[in-house]
Image (cartoon, rainbow, N blue to C red; front, side):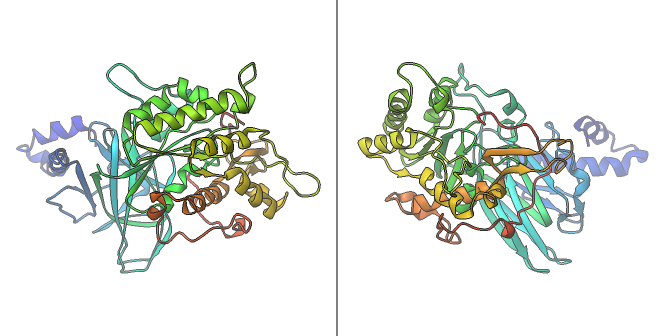
Length: 451
């Protein structure tokens, strides 16, 4: 309900004809004030249910829609999907809950489960960062999931901001709130959000194969690797579609990262797809590309952070004999040479994705990319044929490659891989037929930049 209505009703409690509405809105106002009173510690607790009364946070007794004045609520026109029972909200349709928050890292604790039915819950945060994958919860049981979310904006200091690309202005990553997406058969008892100051931050610098793709069916490994770290780590993904090393720096994205990165944090650097297209004297794999990689490394080290180089993901391009064409020219070798010269850890994603695609084969590998026949999605009257960008299945497989690469490096971050994450062999990748992750309902048929 709009805050203006709440204030009017709150001031009219003495009117008999407004008693019932006034009491309801007064309670929402009281709950909102309780939430605001925790600003000093930056703890926000939301408890769901028609009979829930929380003394420490906000009781949500109805499917209140998000508005910026209230500062929380069910978002993106999904309030009607949330059904409130006595002690939780339930839904079987994709449902978003948002909380207005300043830039920072937050630990989110979600209490799941129902006395009435079993659940199968998937949770994504912000621009479809995977946090919980198809968790089955039996009837009468409770499950608590804790995960970390990076909330950010473009501002660097009082006078400087990084440049966003046009499409990013509508992305969930760049608004003024933390958004949690629930998919599957869901029952949520409470959501607790706490400001987290001492997390290891994994910063990602890269292109469309790394970025958090905001909408289906596009996906990248950076938004799936979030599911494979423990609660000591948060991922801050600054990668953006269409970027190369010079444009990433020119848009002040590197400057933004450097304004925040601290000793013990990590900077993962993966470029190549778009750097290949930069022509002219002094450019190329052994020119500006190698020089800028070295600069990124040195700047991260000056901040006490640990740089990690990732060679670029392969494109899906096969020879007739079933082997993959090397479409990146000298760029992977140039990155390997920089890593060796600068004594920087390197994850050879080019090699791993080559093994992966060849193991699947030409035709089956299509299932890892955005390749869908016409009319798969509303308004899609032409087939999608993309050999560069992944769908969720493919992005998750590459995230597993990166995790395995971390596991094989002599860096402290490997100790933060969640215990549930099994070893992964890119020469024996998973089958698409086993992939059942629910898709988000927000989609876009236009290809990301950098195709």
